[in-house]
Amino acid sequence: MADLLVQNLSLTARILINAEALNMAESVGNYTRHRKAPVVVPSESGYSIIYVPAVSGESLAHAYQALLAHIASQKGLPVTGWDLQGFFMKFSDENIIKTYYAKELTKALKAKDEAEALDMLKKLDPADVEKTILKTSVVADVGGFLYTEKLAKRTSAIRFAYLIPALDALITGGASLSPQLHVRYTPEAKKGEQALFYVESGSALYTLTAQLVISDIGKVSLDPRIRDEELEKQRASRIEAAIDALTVLVEGVLFGAKRTRYMPQWDVRSILVAYSRGPVEYNVTPGLFNDYMVKSYERAVALTKSLGNSLIINMYGYNGEAGYLQEPVVKPEVRNVKFEKTSTPAEALSKAKERVMSVINPLG
Image (cartoon, rainbow, N blue to C red; front, side, top):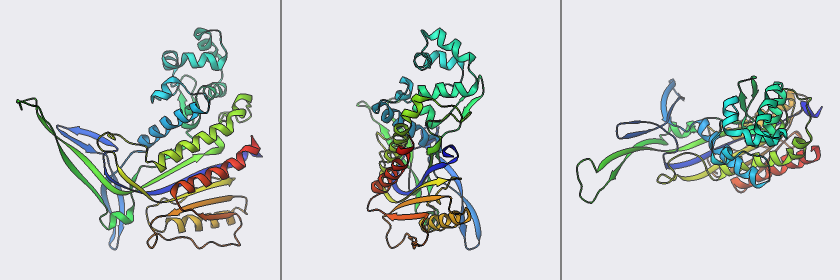
């Protein structure tokens, strides 16, 4: 029955970020543009579409995997040299493996040399290919991959939404894009040496939403019957590393580009983290409006009731928007949904991790 249990960690945070250039999409002449995304905003007369500053889920995922590689390496877990450098080719085909991952593959397959390892890989079925890659890289385990030679596909356990402004802040004008003038100056000010250029920076109360499917980590998805002693011994450590990387990413806003001159001014205004265990995944309501904690709690209560209390949800919330952000009225009689307030964002993430590990460690 343990294999049927879905364990899921979800979170949403409202982060005030000012003067950032975390995701630049294109350059037109001397003008570098911030990424924008269309969002639908409700109003009294209906709905309208506006374009707002955004950071792509791919950008967030890249930063997360880079953090995961270093955290996993410090724990003595397997990662590749390219993972540590921030290149995630992900074992996509035989040529990529031969060029970049042959050394790690040889170790995982316990082959005498790289040629033998590549020959062994060709003879494996897709599930055994997946198992071999999991033993080679924790980043591939958590971040997923697609080996096209045998269609060995592993869906990512870590999932990110686009970082977009909270809709309640948008309605009141709380988001902006503005070009900033920069100058390259030379002593003699010769023509062609000096240059004017513009970088479009953004400021907004952003909503970050993420999900980590804990029950997928360290297990072969293509054939759940496969057991590997090495993976099972590492499973708790792999899960801990995955949660630690997510914690650091969110709590420190450690993602995005152009941080050397556009290091963002940030403040995590509120966060809600939920750990669920049961037959289905539960994800918190994105923090787009100031009632997201209330909606998340009420949805959790309704869902556990409809599933006959086979779903257990622990929620941890930090409210730095007191007086504005609504908080749920906890129902003591509902035993399958727990809501706990914390004094800092880090505490919410830490308590969620403690709860996850208290459940995971006895399972192995």
